[in-house]
Image 1 (cartoon, rainbow, N blue to C red):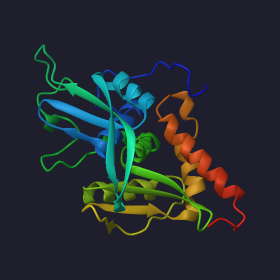
Image 2 (image 1 turned 90 degrees about the vertical axis):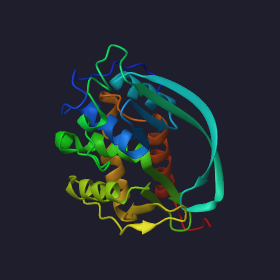
Image 3 (image 1 turned 180 degrees about the vertical axis):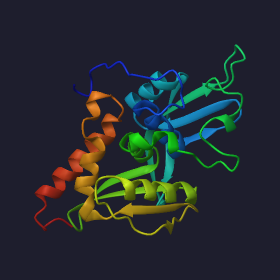
Image 4 (image 1 turned 30 degrees about the vertical axis):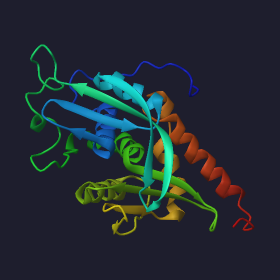
Length: 233
């Protein structure tokens, strides 16, 4: 399958069931979403990923162009496309995704996510988290690729570190640090990024559960690192 091919997404009837699609969806929600009693909103910079999330959970996708500060350095801004998936409470009284309240979704009273149901789908869950609150960059000063996770919720990042530690790839992570915008971040060790990133997107075409633009960014960055000869500044 190529990035432009259409793919029918396999989705379970229960949005909380342990399944690759639900793991990917809730990873995105945790990384870049917001849950209230009557709505869920998820933001992504990849249109195809937004449509995949809509295929999983329903809802409507809206597009706008936004300018925001870079998480690690608020003196830098970037303009990008933003796609927001909005899922509202059902008009038939069935509630939000068939649940009576947000607390019946995988989030507790303090707003922390419960990922136990998706333990068998850690790759899709981590992929959703990376695409929701992660960054990928080529570091020209060292010829390496960086993967980091940035979020306002320290506990979510701690859970993400635990998920990475439990994955089949040896991918040590750095300590949580504060960002200039008031949130937190951590990075995967540069030496582990090629194996971790490759594992994260391995066979993703089979399910369609990925953001094509994010995978392309990873592939281009890894190619740059492979071609690095030490002359770049």
